[in-house]
Amino acid sequence: MVSYKEIGLVNTREMFAKAIKGGYAIPAFNFNNMEQLQAIIKASAETKSPVILQVSKGARNYANQTLLRYMAQGAVEYAKELGWENPQIVLHLDHGDSFELCKSCVDFGFSSVMIDASSLPYEENIALTRRVVEYAHQFDVTVEAELGVLAGVEDEVASEESHYTKPEEVIDFATRTGCDSLAISIGTSHGAYKFKPEQCTRDPKTGRLVPPPLAFDVLDAIMEKLPGFPIVLHGSSSVPQEYVDIINANGGKLPDAVGIPEEQLRKAAKSAVCKINIDSDSRLAFTAAVRKVLADKPAEFDPRKYCGVARDWMEELYRHKIINVLGSDGKA
Ligand SMILES: [Zn+2]
Image (cartoon, rainbow, N blue to C red; front, side, top):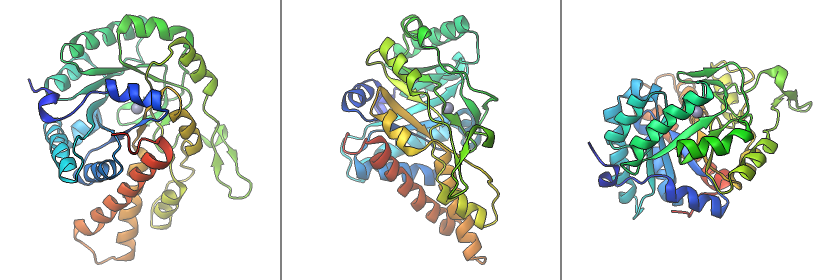
């Protein structure tokens, strides 16, 4: 048993309370590799933004849970080295799908876990979430739960269509599970293809897809039922078209990739939404950089020369999200 407190991590409780009061949101960035982690920590340390490092089930399978946990421990020390005296870093399990997985992360030094039982019937979602909460709270580890279903594909999480969270269920769910935050479905979606072209309109000038707006009426109704309760948005990448264009111009093929417009996320960040998950955008920045370097310099074979550029591009992306979208700079 390793306590996250011993390795310098924090849970989400105080962070979320401050974010709701202050009208900003905490970035939750997924990581699978060293360059991504370096970029996240550098951007967070330089902007003094609290940050949530997320590990998905896919990341555990790809990079190994033990290695990722020690990387997070190293990230705390790296942040201090960069001059961030009191780093506010959370290590969070993204989309935990069983009690055993959540328990193993709690036992291993994670400071926060998500139990995603949203695909189960309502009462089963409550029972499993409750079980994880009871275990995690003994160690002061915070728990995110989910109600409603997001569309899209993220690692092993996939759903054809979305079902908005029902505001009439949230009080009962939050009270009976004791969860610390709630991921809701209001039209965000996992992956780089958040909407099918037929769900969108097309900008006549650019020919680009314009996605349907988020259901802010559902968010408002949820906030009315649970005033001040921390709300989480998954699938909130914006799929920057400049990355998509660079990828497509350098041998890639991402037709009609579309995300959530940043002005909608800015609006959400000012509400009780205090955690916004961003993964696909960093994948796109990484891929765009690598494709461009390899296309421009076909003789290049030193991975540092293209992964290093990818790291710079991701860092710039993270800094942009922190400062211009979530407003979490200077809050840690
Ligand atoms: Zn998610």
